[in-house]
Length: 88
Image (tube, rainbow, N blue to C red):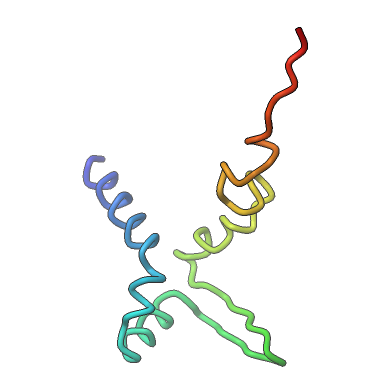
């Protein structure tokens, strides 16, 4: 159980840093990363569609949720940060 928690924490940190790793990766490393994550990539008329491999689908679907702040930053949401109306 403790190993699984450790694995999840390490994996989570790696996912958070993926964009930075990708930015500075060699072309061959970028290709490896793309092949690891996606089972299909399509480009048509300037648009990209993709299918992720099973283990990565949840990571991509989490940002499609209608729950939470639209910008994904809680303090940037006026519904959360507005001054409450207090009646006295």
